[in-house]
Length: 71
Image (cartoon, rainbow, N blue to C red; front, top):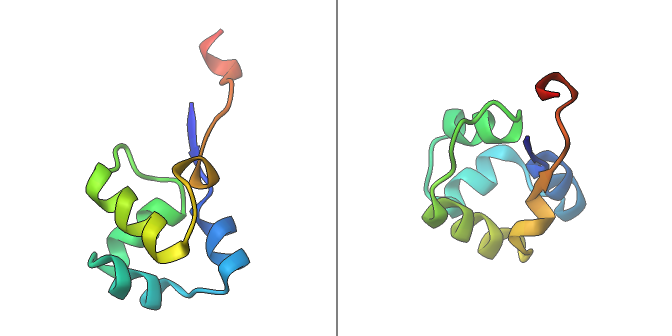
């Protein structure tokens, strides 16, 4: 399963939800869904904008973790 560690990167960069949403060009609600790991999909355009705003790589935000429920 893919885990979105956006909250960790936002904390490292000391960027708030509203500030990042403004820089990325998405709503606070949609960014909150990503931040809370509730998203089912992420547009590459959005991921690109997040990485640009936080000056990071996609791998800093996205992580693959084995899901024990699938075994």
